[in-house]
Image (cartoon, rainbow, N blue to C red; front, side, top):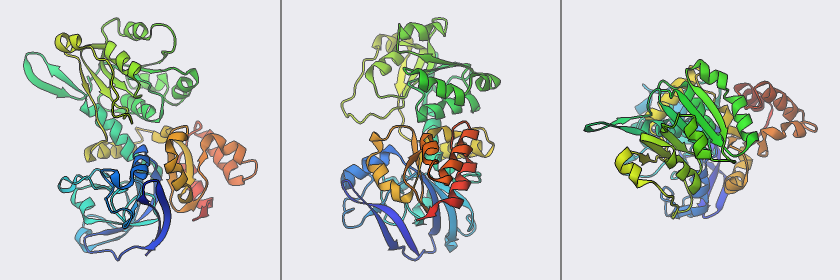
Length: 419
């Protein structure tokens, strides 16, 4: 079968290739990709080429398909997996397979398997590692967001607290405790707020900070104080750009500090602010991944010794985290549409990936079967003056509080130009 796929050919060398997929083996699955959300990790793989740990050394000779946050439909199933998967089923993939200790992953390491493609062949190891996950949601883009949301869920599970008198850690955030999400109104921060107020292990107080009133106001319009209250969480949005931010944050806890603090920006003063607001046995989760290998920040080790404060970091989620996300999505407990700020077709994926750090906003969503310039949702109205399709998309998004939606996806897929 012919496929179109964006492949890594070397450093800063992405090409939209058209080629024939190999015939599906008995231990493989043929699949159609519908959506892929772009990740900064893909940008890193694209600029590093074969020097990236997940990209093969010979990528210049054997190019690999990029994109690892994808969702689609199964087309055909090899005999080995026919009792578990069926044609027509929707799926998503956990790319961190850890197959026999290897770092190889879909979207980095395989010539015929990745998210920025029309059709792919899923290799045996994906199924062997239980990393092909059935997905019954009503929109493909929700499935594409399972990987980034699993990172958030994994971070919440990775936090830990001590048990007085014994050497035993309690995993997860403190149920009914006090939580702060610092620099938390970016795309992943919004996902964390959504999860914190809708998961089965909630804080009683959730304080979300930023230094921009407009970003805070947008976050509050999407994830409201009222919605949090209905779920037993007191949600506070706080601008920390002026005055004594630490004092303001501590006042909200009556001076006791926070059980769980998540830092969503790799900025030393934000990390240090997080350290200063930890309560006894408080856990600071450094969620933001820095690009600077020498990134450091001060940490109060007096409190580490006498107050049992501690720090943890995670990079990615596991398969159970993805399953938890999918289960919550299927029950309509989460709305990760707040992560999406741009939409485009497969022909826009190359430029978007290579320029990802320069493009403002949140997640860039690629629909692999269509041709469409990468377009910000906020620009739909202006584009709609010349293109009726964008005018309709603007109207749909405005009815969904300015967010992408299953309705918008369905309309786009029915009306956009095929690639």
